[in-house]
Structures are given as C-alpha cells and as structure tokens.
Image (cartoon, rainbow over all chains, first blue to last red; front, top):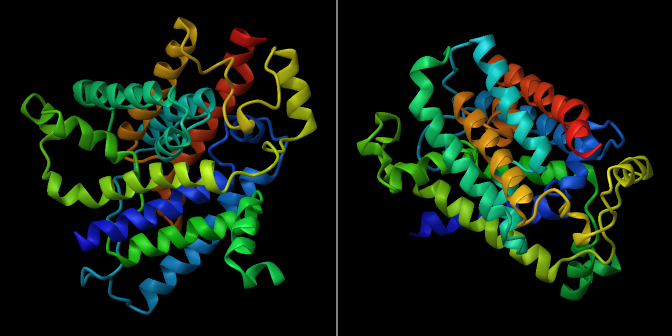
Length: 138
Length: 193
C-alpha cells in the first residue's frame, strides 16, 4: 500500500507538470504540429536530453532500483513498418484530440468531462487492436 | 527569491505557466522516480489493464495478464487525475494559455475562437454534440489502437524509449509526427477549413 501511495504521488507530480507546462492543451498540440511555437519542442527536447543523461548515468553507475534490479530495457523487435504505421495512427489521435494517454487523464482531473469519451475511445481502440492483431504485421 | 520564503509565495510562483525547460526537467524527474522505483514510465498500458479488469482476458489472451503487476500504473494514473484537479483548482494561471498569434489567426479562419476554456480545450471540436462525441471517440480510438500496436505512447516511446536510446521508439515517434502532421495539415482542413 505504501508503495502504491508513492506511485500515486509521482502521478500527482506528473499531472501538475502536464497542466502547468500546458502540454495538456489542445491548442499547444495544434500549435506544435503547425510549427508556430517552440514551446512543446522545448519541453520534449529537454525531457529527452535529461532523460538520456539520467538513464545512462543510472546504467553506468549500476544503480539498484528500489525493487533490487538494475536499470535495463528489453529492446523491442525492430519492425520499421509496424512502428511507422502504429505511430501514424497514434499521431492522428494526438492531433485530433490534442491529447494522449496521460494528458487525457489529467484533463479529466481538470473537469473536462468530454475526455471520458476520449478515454472510452482509447479503451475501444485497445480492445479492437487485440482482436485484429493477428492480421497486422509485427 | 523572496517568493520562495513563504508557502503562499511558492504557490504564486507555481501558478504561473511553467517555462518549457522547467517543464521538461519535471518530466525527466518523473522518469527518474519511476525508473528508480523499478518501473517503466508509460501510460497507455493502463487501457489494456482496463480491458483485463473488465474480463477481456477470457476472450483474448492479449488481456490475460497478471494485473497485480500493474497496480503501480493504476496508482500513478489516479495520481495524474488528482494532479490535474489540483492544478486546475489551486494552481490555475491567471491568464489563458499564451499560444502564438499565428495559431490564433489560423484557428479564427476555422471558426475556432481563442482564448476559451483557459486555453486548454477546443470546444468547437470536442463537445457533447453528435459530431463532437464522434471526434472524441475517434481521437481516442486512434490513440488506443496506435499505442497498443506500437507498444507505447508519448511517455513510453518519446520519453522512456528515447532515453534508453531505442531505435524502435525513434521510428514510432517519427510515426507520431507523420500522423499528427497529416491530421493537422491535410485531414483537419478538409473538416474544419
């Protein structure tokens, strides 16, 4: 339970960050895809550069996680077609709804109830993927 | 720095829109905390968990997973909702989101007014009219389907995967932009233009 509370608190930090960074704004996402502001690129770029430094430092120093494991990543099978198609479909939804799996939860917290519908759509999309996955290139 | 000396000052400071560099650093902090806690930062699997809890594992082995290993993600997701609530109610910026003048002008041509909804939501697109619900459902569907097909979303691939220098994640992120740019520049102009 204590562990779950810790994850909950990290989630709160994430929710506040996504809100105050304005990354949950439909308008910020639209502006990003129109290349009319540096804001979103600055956020993602900073997070990725710091992320690379943090993750690789943790790996180099062989820092143990709280679950007594080392920081590792099981690479996914490289299938360019699959990842391009999957990414493109996801991108359609990202631009249309101005949201993605994390921000749609944060927006619910803001009280924008229409995101219940976006959430429902995501669950349906996940379910339909599982139903047709045998027919898709992987 | 005087601001930092009192709790009120801190809240005042946090209530301003955050600079992109600080925002990015805070996302990196979340990545660090989750990694240090032995988990991988990623949210889209939550929607798979929901299917599992709803009993989809009986129908499709894709959902037949040990849900106990996913409790942390549900706690994290619950926190994200509460974080949104806290930000909206206690840390709201005095001004709506300051998007660029060029974007405002362009949206005006589509009949989308700005600012509105504190600059967070375009109500002309996402609303409870039949058309608005369809866009919300479709948007969500693409996100859920694409994230599962590519085994990750913006947090899982663009943040975690790229931080681990994973090529599949880079290709997926390129896909995110192919899809996002196509939707923004080709499909949406046909609908709203």
